[in-house]
Image (tube, rainbow, N blue to C red; front, side, top):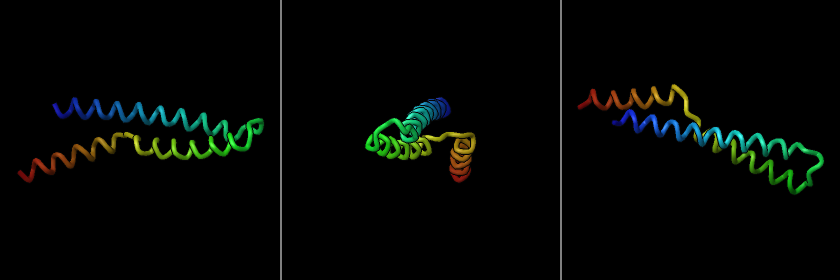
Length: 79
């Protein structure tokens, strides 16, 4: 049951990370657009930095799942 829950959480984190990546890319493009106003560009750059932080927070890879599995197995071995 925990495996199904972990897979669901991993899928959710992956989706949130992808959404942050898309938002970051959009904000980067606005920040680089010389036709946009200075205030718009600065705001987009600030938002891109926040999106990058969210993207890294939600980053899920095989190492994170393996680390979780190892820590769970270590705890089981201590019981």
